[in-house]
Length: 269
Image (tube, rainbow, N blue to C red; front, side, top):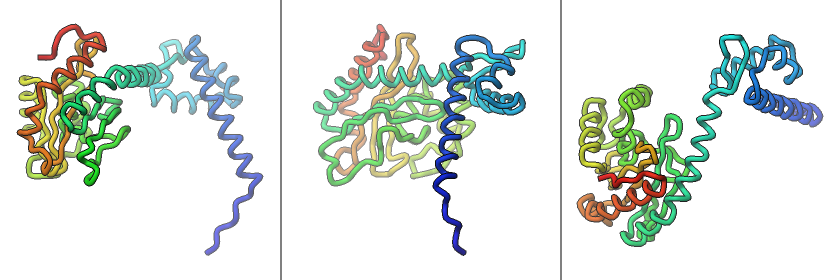
């Protein structure tokens, strides 16, 4: 059955309406940042009836972009602040980590990653490829989420999170045994996280992809909180896990150097 052809005028009109709606929502968030916003003022900013304005505010509230006060007005929500901090943190972290990570790659020859907890995911925010991997490309990509429990960087960050935050993140995880070495249940993972926190670094012994070996170290900010992890990765035919661990002192030194750049005064140990 043939679908009716799109009407150019209607498409253009729909685009303009959507664009106007987005602009008004942005204006609404800005007003809420400036002063407590009443429902009446919100309706005026949006150019809609109060009932429609209320639905839009409730949508923004569910995303934590605005927050309803006890007086019934709306102010800027923590979601916007969190996004701003994450964006600034990622830019600063990549900037401070760039030179040390590239020096580590040159010295070891291994692929180097930088990963950060962003929202409920652990994301690769930088990667320095090894020329040894020209024939076989690693699956990692900048901007891509990594397994939170079947990766060295994921386990490193998890190990240092407050218990409540770790429980919250893992409550959404459906454990899957990707390989024979995967920590595919909460009990075995918790034991592994304790070991990681005790020794100060983590390994990935082919836990997501059997042929990928990895070691990771935590990166701390000025408050001493672990906000990211740096790692070295190799394909097993190029370097075994034991061979990769021979460069662990260099990785720890690199993580310490990045942490100092972020304002953390002491070595990670």
